Image 1 (cartoon, rainbow, N blue to C red):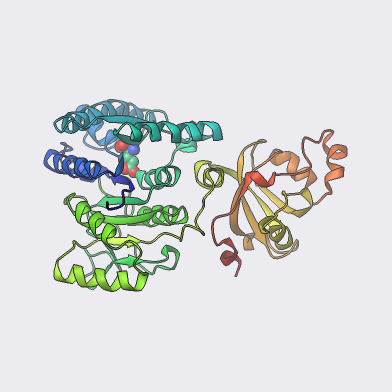
Image 2 (cartoon, helix red, strand yellow):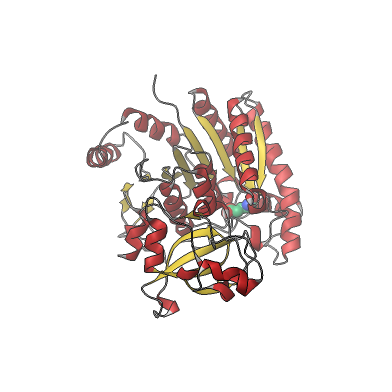
Length: 415
Ligand code: GLU
């Protein structure tokens, strides 16, 4: 039996809706449905992240350009999301494939129990053989609680669900060294081992994406890096040829356990001979380096930071040791932003207590036991002084070690 995978498939607005008329691209959606049902019947667990609510809502209500007023966009999303899910349901129904709708905002996962609840629900839906269709709940989300774009949402979904693969379906076949539409010298990249080391020019990239979506290659690279840190392989493939996904998944199944070098050679050869369609694979960190803990992934990617704590190198070393300590007030050099107790903040490191704040490097995130005002008052002090300064001491730690998370290979940031 070939291995079965959990696969997240992200479909951008431009794959689902015509950019000019904003009519649904029915032929493409039907081929997507056929492909996804086929993958499902092969035993894979399929999760769809579908954009398009705003674009569909615009057409339904006769808008030719995206309105600037937030409430209007949200109203259009509420009109469009219903039509969009109805359309998906209609198409999947033809092949007797049940679907479910999952609308998320960051607010829905702000509490770890809620986060786990969302994971359990999606798992239950998958166990039933259903294909969940996820979108950002645009109707209710404002900037503070937004995932932002669906590339990011799909990478977070893939990490949350411990997916094996994330397909970012887009209007180019692969990642190129530059924008292939404007630069004839642009070369496709088949395999990316480390996204952060990638040298590509995304300046002329659609940047803010197509006329109907919000993504572009830049957000895809961010999504791929996030997914990779969670052990998920990201694939960029052509959305107008959904059936390519079948060839790519079959190739992955055939090459389980192949070394990266061998995979690179084989893939280049197969693409050249036309045995497999052109696409890009962003390899993930090996499972033993990737983020394994749900709590850590949630702190790093589920929560939005409200400020930052700047700590010195000695403090960082104590926090990143294997039997790491909690974050004590003594290690804190500066506090920025306004936040309350239990909120999430960035952790940034400076060489020494006298280093300029501008030299601080981002190393991780944590949930704090005290507010920004309180931390400003107790920074640099010993824990036994907290009560004297604040009049109370809820904890000796600014953040407990279970509430501190560093991304994999964080030490490299400081080198
Ligand atoms: N959630 C938005 C929508 O459904 C799209 C966001 C995106 O494409 O990144 O219209």
